[in-house]
Image (tube, rainbow, N blue to C red; front, side):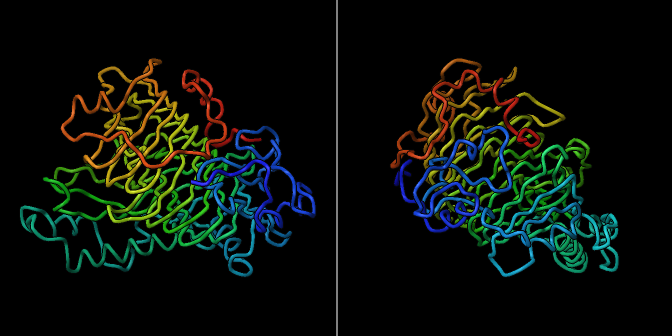
Length: 447
């Protein structure tokens, strides 16, 4: 990693963007002001870029999003149709600022009418009852994947929903919630795919739910129901900053899901997944609550790049994947992991190090619930590394890898071949994180 210098000539993209705000001189010399820091007070959120040295997304050309947008591409939206139109307006890659006012329901038609699962299934021939009858393991067996009329109908219905809830985000875009409006997207999935320079801030992502989970009889020893749609999906994306957002399954918690074939009918996938060679990503001051498979970094053991920073985030009522990381260089610092069960979500593990990933974990705090052990906080496949320092469990500095390795056969390594240099705001002690992040993390905090 090449450290970002505090005193440097800004890259061309950032100089152009900042000139319009008067924050740098015409010669391109100057400094990113305190007002642009992620945890600053009253600022122009829509025009704020990521501060220097603030995680991997500040590397290279940095992350400015739509900071240079002209008036025609600075748009306030209140509906799904307005959001989609604003994201598609003008030339591809033109800087744009999208201000979200209030909650947007992604499951609506172009006229704003709410859509149900039955609406998506209409005309496809799909029905859950017919699907369950067709692929009952006692009849269909467990050796082959579902195929035929009902599986095709399910896929068609799912594709209809995907067309509604999947919302593509272009390069050079800032999507920001208007303060004081409970801004966010219900049931939606932002797709940040093969684009560069995107900022997502001050939004609540709630209940991104798949109406048509697929049965996989070979997933695990008993089979599983698998769903699509992450609240935010990064695939092959670079320079992305996700900051001060909230992610939750509320109001549809997994405990209310029925069980078919003896397995939970899982309608939620990831909250924020970073895959397919995505790179240079900073995830800061977000709140992740009441969710199972929360964050995947790397879609397979053959994925590439995946340089990601997670700092000052809160994980509460999270079952697993906070994150599950493969392959890349991941920096975790000053996060709070509360393993107390909430709304039916019981903790399994927090961080999973797989496929040779090199994680550096500094000064994080774990609140260990009654009945949970420090040896259960990490997980891995025996190839990943976690170089930890200053991490606390219930206020006591704890060597997480040592306690994990003492209790588990698949050992986590401690040596990594890189050293973080982009760690703005790194707090030297984790002791105060539970109290301080309760007021600083999540949507609705920025003014």
